[in-house]
Length: 244
Ligand SMILES: *Cc1c(COP(=O)(O)O)cnc(C)c1O
Image (tube, helix red, strand yellow):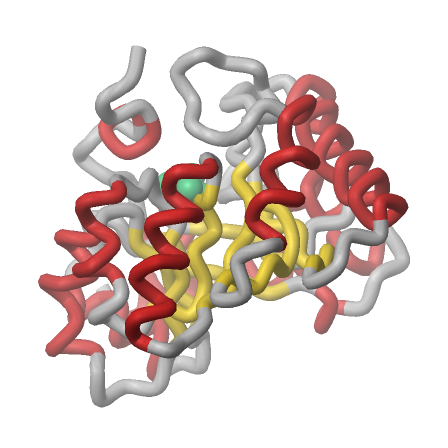
């Protein structure tokens, strides 16, 4: 089990390295984030102790369950799942440094209210629905700038960039189109010069398509299956929950 995880991490690092070389980018421009949904604390610890310290959960409940086990091992937590407003109070208890899935004004407003009372800030990425699928969360690309302008007024929310899941398809070029949409949007937002908005991060690419994402400018790739193995729940359980 330990050997498998370490071997898989080495394979992923090589894939990232090769993709960076192919697109003329430096390896340190791309961070590996481990998507740890359904993965036990013991297995996560193996990766953390090996030096892969950026991890993310999709559900506040799982974050909570693993918190005690992981709190003494150096790591950084992002959140990449759909965040319900009634979970805000909870998520802020568990040292999440970045919420990558900010996708609607009400969520921003409620986060800001709560953060203000606690006198703290949090990094956020704006999640964009680049595949135009009804079932996926994320703001429509056409509405992203409007959302970002709203969020930029909340002093507790530090916008660092964009996140997308993209189309789940074996056809690379269709997937690439989604990543190009995110990159183009990033450029458009930079042009707008909105105060309090940084646009450095592009979180895109997963186990199956990280090379394509890196070629299109990803700065964070989110990998689960290729490191920890297949999950028993279908991804729809995490991605479309309460939708469609
Ligand atoms: C599960 C998940 C990933 C990782 O997907 P894999 O195909 O297992 O690499 C990436 N991003 C999000 C939002 C996820 O929920």
